[in-house]
Length: 313
Image 1 (cartoon, rainbow, N blue to C red):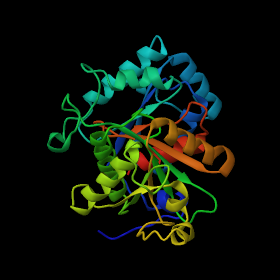
Image 2: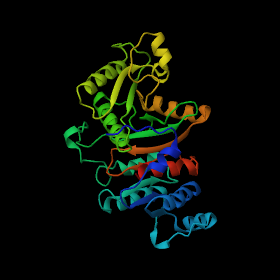
Image 3: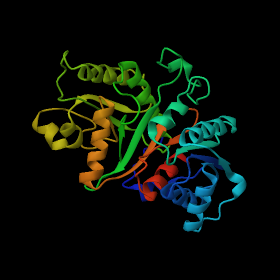
């Protein structure tokens, strides 16, 4: 694989070429930022759309935007929960590989409860050979891809939205998810498994997991990536810090992915970089039957557009 690096989202999005037309299904689409993002995305990529939600509100918002929505592409729903359930149902009926699911105005817990529903959800069973969940489904995980001013390329944080306290086996799937995704963009990711320090401490499970994940990668068990750990954030981010501590690293100061020890750590890190570091984010859930656009309801139209772009590749 040709190794690729993207300095910013402009370089990434202009390089994306969707292999075929896809259909984006938006749950609770009566949201200004979501409709604006979809409208712009349809002009950039071979995308079709289906909007699920309050028909009158969708029409009103689209009229305000000057977005001439095809009313036959709107599916009425009685509530946010109903919209999420119907959107997931629509996605299930699309031909394999042609759908993208997007969270609109619905809250994340309601949305994900429909995605994860054991009977009617869209958890993936297409990778059973390496699945690590007891119920034979692949672990789903969230990525936050960020452009951070001052860093020389895009950085991805995982998992800040799905797995509260990932087990070692879940971390294996999380690495597979992000590696498969970034390989699809031409990136062979350098992954730092974060801990409080570079020391292996039996009392700090994430440090032990990090060491074992690095060994697994060295044996070829994690795909086309480079994994190191445990690494503290400063060592992952700054090569000089690693050199001062005498740490030899292939990835320090040049990481593509930060693997967080918990959903709280990943969430706080990503949101801190956005709030105080001026970062711009695209967000998605990986490991389901389709890519899922998932950012905060308060995210800007630009962030939602970027999230659609990385899922439309």
